[in-house]
Amino acid sequence: MPLDSTGKINFDDIYTAPDPRAFFGTLRRLDYDIPQQAKAYFAKLIDEYRAEADVKVPTVLDLGCSYGVNAALYRCDTTMERLYDHYASAGALSRDELIARDRRMDAVGDDVRFIGLDASAPALDYALAAGFIDEAIHADLENEDPTEEQRALLSEVDIVISTGCVGYVTEKTLVRIARENRPWMAHFVLRMFSYGPVADSLGELDYETTGVEGVFRQRKFASDEEQTQILDNLSVAGVDPRGLEAGGRLYARLFVSRPHGAAGGLASALNALPLRDRG
Image 1 (cartoon, helix red, strand yellow):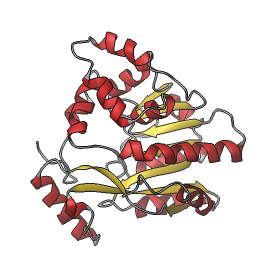
Image 2 (cartoon, rainbow, N blue to C red):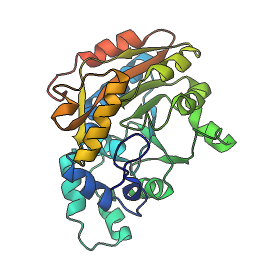
Image 3 (cartoon, rainbow, N blue to C red):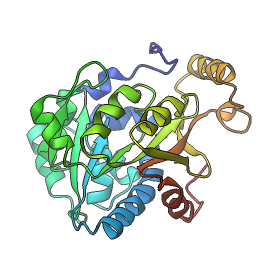
Image 4 (spheres, rainbow, N blue to C red):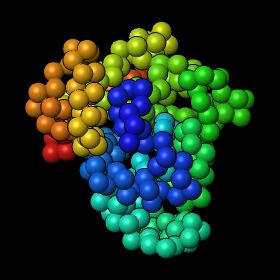
């Protein structure tokens, strides 16, 4: 598989299929795990926002949502391993049959409204049809301003989350989102990418940014070539890979950004979560 401009394996094909079977099949082989680790942090973030803002049903924007994985984990109170099994057992089901089976999954987390934003129309269409997300924004905010309809949806967002798209999307996208409603943000960012430009740009909108303690496994390297390129990228960035990427996996850090200088308290609340899923 070819490398993309960041040095990672190019997975474009699994994000544009009409259903997520190829997505889960490919990423299971790479032990892709970061949405599972992120689940507890996003749940805590939502609880903190609900308590502070006194909003019973906050609106969460999942940036780079693909097939609605983060929303499915939260709403169905499930795990990545169960989702891997769920789609591996789909066999010869048609897309419509698979969607019907997805919609029968137990929904226990309907106290959140999810909006998915992604560049893949097929992935968004599936996430909507399966009931994982409530609204979809199909947009490339790196290169274009949101439409009036998209701005209306963004103006309702309370929290923005992501588990791997920052680095592919930059401060251009995040500033365009932040301008509409000053939402709280929590982004898992691969260590080879700097969150500094995002933090600086959000700072111009009166945001404060703080890193959460620890590092988080993303997935295994897909090839020796990918690992070599990523280690080169880390070296250029001045990031020490010993004990982490040098051992065969990609790792991320979690950054929270909040308006009005309140990121430190939010990071402290997230730091209080158990360490078992980190590193």
